Length: 165
Image 1 (cartoon, one colour):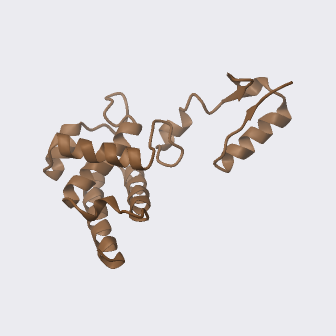
Image 2 (tube, rainbow, N blue to C red):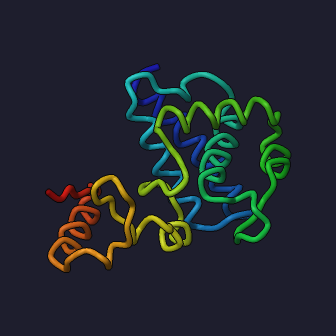
């Protein structure tokens, strides 16, 4: 596939995801999905070159849902894996395998800075923790100047740990 064909396929998958997000989820999931698809499209070996677009659309929602507790009834929005697969006409094992492929390829996990919803980012229990001498301690227990350094580094997408002598 050339770049134009990849972009067309990418847009086809994004359109499918958009329909699902409009009916079952929200704009935030759609934006995260678009960002994820764009990142996949920049890979040397674009994974969605082969396979059905519906499977990839279901897999993207599944991957994001897995790291954002989409399948937990206590969260909003909430959908089941079956709802995703019924909507796209896909099989559970196929979309689940592609979801795993996406999560592994992009190293996605819970508390992911780039692909977590705002609710997950705000509720991240590790956001106010820092590593000092190999121990995790509350950020507010270290000197103010170090707290500023940690917050600045995290704003830049980095992280810090400290060792005292």
